[in-house]
Amino acid sequence: MEGVDLNLLRVFDALMEDGNLTRAGFRLGLSQPAMSHSLAKLRKITGNALFVRVPNGMQPTDLAVSMAPSVRDGIQLLESALETRAGFDPKACKKTFQILLSDIGELVYLPRLMNRLREEAPAVNVRALGLPREAYAEAFVHGEADLAIGHLPSLRGGFYQQRLFSDSYVCLVRKDHPRIKGHLTASQFISESHLLIEPGGSPTRSASLQTSTTTLFEHYLASQNLTRRIALRVPHFTVVSDILLSTELLATLPSYVVRHTPHRPGLKMLELPFETPNFEIKQFWHTRNHDDMANRWLRGVVMSLFGEAA
Figure 1 (tube, one colour):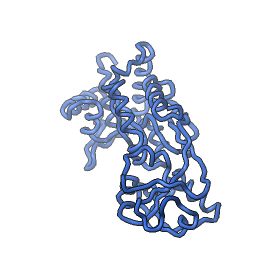
Figure 2: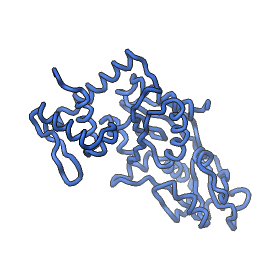
Figure 3: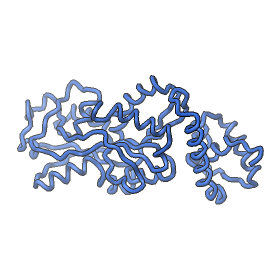
Figure 4: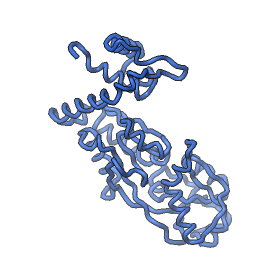
């Protein structure tokens, strides 16, 4: 190790994670020439190519794959030791936190989070990871995620969790709907056509569906022998408002989402005509991050912004 620049290991770790020289350099704040220079040094030290170019990026060699877990554990150990000795100062932190969120979560949580970070930690960056829910656990295990926020009952063993708040459902419909006026009846809910948000983006999408608030509501309707026509299914929340404004469709959504996303004047929120189950929104983190001071600070920020007390 004598004479080895430990920053080279950060370059190696970033390349293992991103598989792309430019993206890895962006995360580290290094230019592509600087990344190439560091990679050349690593190759000289190890006597191995470590990464070979392929059409879609950089592919690690067998030696690189075998080195990766030890390098990542070593980096985390050093960071933890330095933070413990020096104390954590958010104003001096330049870390990029990677947070697992749905597109709904991006709209609800990111604006307020970024405004708080601007005040308390102006050099901290955030990367929102829009992965399928069934990929969340793997992302944590591989060190690719620092935090996840949402209704994620599939994250159990190996993860810590903290409850933020409890939520339920409301109905969203356009204000000048020809049949639905000041309130929604059970017969209207059953007879009208609906828009449904289905998690998408994965060939194993059925696994995502089993952990979503959408599925929780559908299971509730089935238990009550209530059926409705789903006229349209979309994978993203961001298109819902525009579609509702232009159609006679109804959308059932978490109430927190409706109350904390930009208001559309042409839409109205209605209480559902029956009691619906509550669900909990939590933040999750992997065991390896539990004692990390930066991660602990971020969790505190999230709780202060979105916890029930807030």
